[in-house]
Length: 356
Ligand SMILES: [Zn+2]
Image 1 (tube, rainbow, N blue to C red):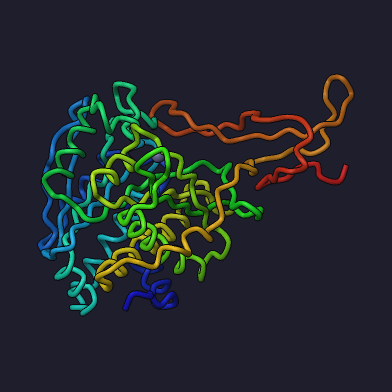
Image 2 (cartoon, rainbow, N blue to C red; image 1 turned 90 degrees about the horizontal axis):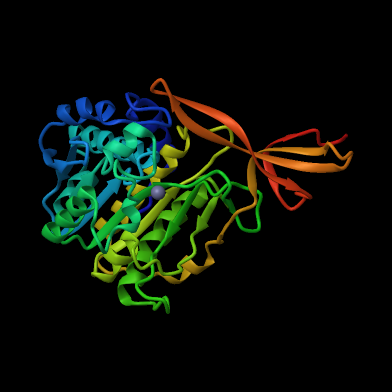
C-alpha cells in the first residue's frame, strides 16, 4: 500500500487536482472560499490572526494516534506547498466519496493538522517575511512574530510525531552532478552543530527516503538534498530538537514551469507518499539511502547569454534571473543580471547566443 501506482495517480490528478488555485502568487482570499467549502470529516478552525489581522486557519482530518502536522507559506511568496496541500485535500475528499479503503485506513491511523498559509501578510505582499519584516523560519527561538507564536502553540497542543514544512526554493538550485533543476529537495534538519544522527532524525530521513523513491520513478535525478548545517533559529531544526520529526520539502524548478503548476503535482505526490508511508509502517528505520540523494548544487540560471561582447570588446557570458515584484497588485517578472564572466560551469534553462 505504501507505494503509489503512478499511472493511476497521474490520471486521477489530471481530472481532479484543485484547479481553483493556480499561479505563483496565492493570497488568503484565494484559499478562503475553498476552505469554507470543506465538509466533514474535515474540520476548519481559525487559530489566530496575522500581524495585519488576517485569519490563519487550520484544517484537521482523521482520528488516528499518529499525529502529523503540515504547514505551508510560512514564506509568503512560496505558494507551491499550498497548492499541493489543496491537491491533497481534493484527493482525500474524492477518495472518501469513493469509500476508498486505504484513505479510510490513513484517517483511522493518522490525525492530520494542516495550516495552509501561515504568513498571509507575506502572501499578500509577495514577500518571504511577514508584515513586520520577520523571517518566520528564523524566528523559532525568540518567537517575535504573531505567526510564529501561533505555529508554536499548535505544535505544543497537538504534539505531532511528524511535521512537513513546505517551502519553495529558487531556480538556481540543480541536482549536484546533473544539469537538472532540483525540482524537489528535502532536508532532515540537524538538532546541533555536530549534526548528530539521532533516532528522530533517522525517522525523518526514512520518510524522505520513501518520498524520494517515488519521485525517482517520475522525475529521475531531479531530487536534491539540502545541507544539514545546523541553523539555531530555524523552525525545522528547533522542532526536530523538541522531538517532532520535521521533514523540510522545498519545491523547485521544472522546465518552463515558472508558475510551478507541474512542480505542485510532484510536491503533492511526495506528500501523499509520505503520508501513506507513515500510515503503513510502525517503525521508520530505513534511513541510510537518504545519504545517497545528491546534494543541491547552485549551478543553474534562468537565462545565460553566451559569448556576449561587452564594452571593452571582451567576450563574456552573462547570467540572468527572473525577479518578481508587485505592481498595481499584479505580479510582474523582470530579468535581472545575476553573474558575468566565464560561466562554462553553469547552465541556463534558456541559453542564448551559444554558437557565435
Ligand atoms: Zn521558504
